[in-house]
Amino acid sequence: MAGTDQRTDYRVTFVVLCAGVSSFSLLQSMVNPVLSTIEAALDTDQATVTWVLTAYLLSASVFTPIIGRIGDKVGKERMLVVALGALAVGSLLAAIAPTIGVLIAARVVQGIGGGVLPLTFGIIRDEFPRDKVAGAVGTSAALLAVGGGVGLVLAGPIVAALSYHWLFWLPMIMTLMAAAAAHVFVPESPERTPGRINVSSALLMSTWLVTLLLAVSQGASWGWGSPATIGLFVATVVVLPVWVRAEARSDSPLIDMRMMRIPTVWTVNLVALLFGMGMYSMFAFLPQFLQTPNDVTGYGFGASVTQSGLMLLPQTAATFLAGLYSGRLAARHGSKAVLVVGAALTSLGTLALVLFHDEVWMVLVETTVLGLAFGLAFAALSNLIVDAVPQSQTGVASGMNANIRTVGGALGSAVLASVVTADARPDGLPLESGYTNGFTVLVVTSGLAALVAVFVPVLKAHTHVVRGPQAEAEADAEVRRDDGAAVDATPR
Image (cartoon, rainbow, N blue to C red; front, side, top):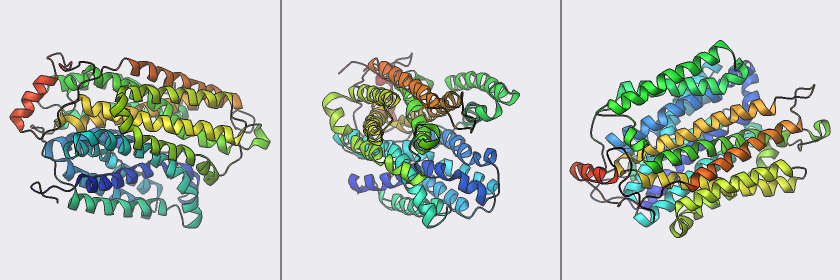
């Protein structure tokens, strides 16, 4: 472990952090295109194999803010090693899983790695020079979206050349190397949030997240009016306010409700919800659109899994480039302006896809615009959250923002699935109008995200210093009123 007296160069730290984020993002996406292969290999059915995705979603949604909060309290470097170690162990179990049950359990373990992203943002804020923070946060945030695109490209060739097991072996090797490098090179955080880990609060939060996401992700297959789906929604409505009240009354909350009420925080989280609906839904349904056989349906391109991934490669490259340059754009124009542009471009790019999708070049241009939009918005969301909260709450605030994007993605995918499949052909394939209607919904949600982004209050950036407990308490008092609003919420 890097010592605190002679701290590792921040550029070395950044390389290690990027490796960890890349490993996590690849595991999010590489499995999606090969579910049918896993279904046949493990002798299961379609309803069961979808739990390979659902289990990962539920686990990551629970552990992302929890691991981020524990990192704020006990040390971000220590918890980064734990999160990467969980990814490696989960990948090993998945690679050797003899049954679908073991594979699903392995995906739950992998979900613990969701804490990599908020821990990364927290370490960047602790270790980097102030003028480098925005660019580093933007690049690492964009890597999450980039990994989604790269995973779609790599999945087909890896399975064809080796087997689906290597979709887990390769990330395992990456995460083991990243965990070892994190232990050696990443310095331990000088920031600590005093107090105990609130276990009861963690259980309450886990309950409402699981009930909500389970209902949303399984509602289409179970039936939106089924007792199971309705029961889960009712449980969410009951448990969520209980959790909020418990957190507000706790002397050691898992999620500080005063922090969540800071105007910049709650408005950026609302943008994240709406933006997540568009971005993650596009990741899920655009490959299906590209793979639809044109000679049968009159739309689509009949692309294979590998071909559709390659068609989306320009989008992935654009996302990465936008993340790289987001820091410079934010320094010149502010993260709020970058967020507005990113959300607006998402809406415009999706509208173009609704209107013009008959030729490959049209889709390539439109998805490249979407890639730029995703990279800009991802970076800006993360930077606005990092700047809006005290340094000791960076991990948990970033974790909740990432979580809210995930919830938005689950909601958007559920809505889009219902719209796309509302009218199907006799052979079961959706009509072209199903996709255009579904993508039109995403035009609206992305437009709303841009509108909300216009009203995000911009705070003066917090001073990037190492503070002791007393100084931290004084700093917290300066940045929050009793009602939770930020004192320094003066527009730049």
